[in-house]
Length: 265
Image 1 (cartoon, rainbow, N blue to C red):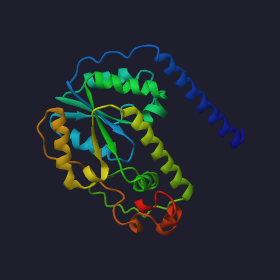
Image 2: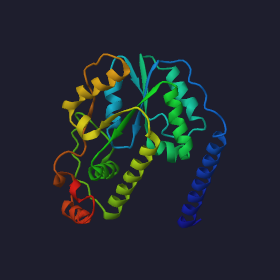
Image 3: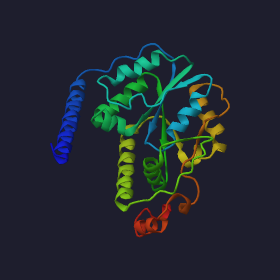
């Protein structure tokens, strides 16, 4: 079998799987979500896009002695996502429990249509989960973070001495990410409309370690818990001026010149 034929076959199989998952979700939409049972009564979900500080916030909260914070428990498709949430909640051994849920995991991994995705968040809220909404105001830096993660890795643990060269930004990739970020912002606005969220913005609340104690105190206050020392073992990957981050910084400026994104540089 030729490589082209093999690739076409894999693509077809992937499309069939996606279609089957979407049909499954349409079938499930006819049935109510199960009630959440036992587990900590203080509950939260970290919701937003990737590269908005969500992994850092998970580490900060999980280091709090009264909080158990899981990472992406819905990272992979599962037939019964509500049951998975209930299982993790039931087995949490802390006063408060939460997990991280990214926008694309609702729409692209679980294949939930918008009405069902809204219903899923409604179900979480009805079960006592408070929503912590992560945002990132600068879409250009957000896009560069997405590109950099794919070139040099998603996270760096403190003490990692490896040097990471500046990233090379291609025009098509940059604008693809800017379009995706804009789409996810619109999705989030629809999914979170009318909800009482604690909103945290990356540059203001998470980028600088000096802000961590204040951020942790806000979340602890939301959960009715005392605050604790703010500790995490992650370091920022893309730090410094634009020339320190992007190898072709002048090209990047040219890409964005005369676009609505130019002032974000």
